[in-house]
Image (cartoon, rainbow, N blue to C red; front, top):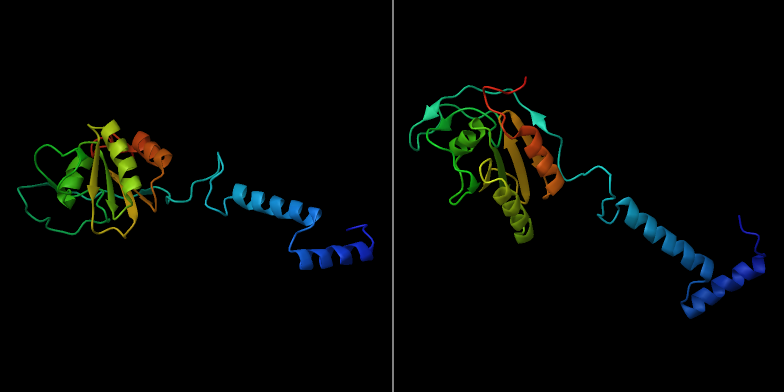
Length: 192
């Protein structure tokens, strides 16, 4: 509560209205509010140590059996997740790295069966794609990066055998955590 006499408050308001300038106490309050909003994340900034919000929690899914498919043979049943986390897959060595052309769903599952992680995306900004390429290139024998039309525009997904995490933007730390936790998970060593 202010101890300022009513006449000074009134004079301050009149001065502010006629000059367009904010008095010293109000300008200090305005600066404090702007700083608070900025540091609290209302402007999109994330404080160190605060929870990231662009990625959903990791979903653990029951794995579905599936064998090897020859050539471009379609799986005999739908995958239980989009993108797939287990099931029918191509035979032969998986395609790790930046996939051109994009991996089919059976090719994605082939990567997962070998203990790899697939980072799939749809219509991301160039800067986001650059960051994803850097991550894939840093893990050339365990990560496949692929475009995937079944995702919502502007999103990405991380998949490993039996695991899925969806993101609305590239969060490098979250992706690296997913890789550390799930890279190397295969049908033979998956923890239930």
